[in-house]
Image (cartoon, rainbow, N blue to C red; front, side):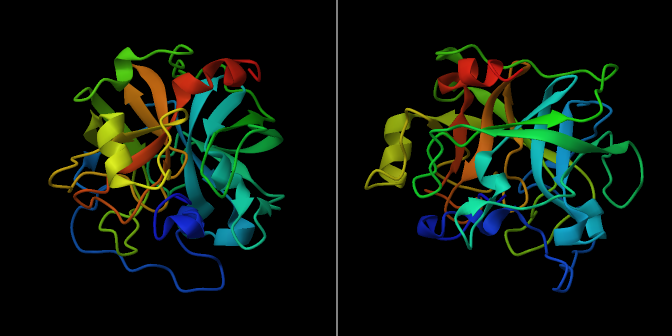
Length: 273
C-alpha cells in the first residue's frame, strides 16, 4: 500500500508498490500466498473490488498493480489519496496510463478490463505528512453498468467502528511482510480496535480518530493488510467503512493497521459521485 509500511515519517508511501519497472520482480513463496493471515478471494464474489495499475511505472508484471480500490457507482472508484502521490516529490504523481482493473482476480491474466481514468479527485484536506483525510475518487472513462457496487457507510456512523466488530480487508499486497506479492486477490477478517487503544499504539498524535480507525489482532498480530494493499476496502456488513492507509510493519502485535475512517468523509465522497 503506499500505505504500509515503514516509518510513518516516510509517510508510508513505501507502499503502494510492488516493484517499479527498473527493478527486479519480487520472489514469490511456494504454495498459497495470502494477504497476511487471510485466504483467497475473488472478484466474482466481490465484483466491486478493483486494482489500480500503471504499466509505465510498475511494468507488465501483475498488470502493473500498485494499489486497490472500490467501485461505488458505475463510474466511480474510491481509493486512498496517498496512492496518487509521489513520495519523492510529495506531490500528486504523474501516471498518464493510470488504469482501474476490474474483474481480474488473478493479475497474471487478461481477465476483465483495464479502464482508463478520466478524472481524479483528492480530498482537499488530505495531508501526506499526517496521513489525515486519506481518500480519493477516480472517475472511469468507461462506465461499468453491469457490475455490482459497494455502498458507502453513512456520514457520522459509529456502529461499524465499535471495538470487536468484524471487518474484512481485501487486496493483492505483500503476504509475508517481506516483499512477496501474490498474483491473486486475498482477504482477511480483522476486528475493529478502540480508538484509545490505537492512540496508545501510535502515540504523539500519529493516530487521529477524527479521520482514522484501527483494525487487526492488536495483542497477537498475524492478520493485516500490507504493502500493495493501499486504498483497498475495509468492509463491515456490506458497506465500505475504511481504506487501507498506513501502519508500522505488517501484522505486528501492538501495531495494527490504520485505515481511513470513511464515515468521517462520506458526504464529501458522495458529492463526487
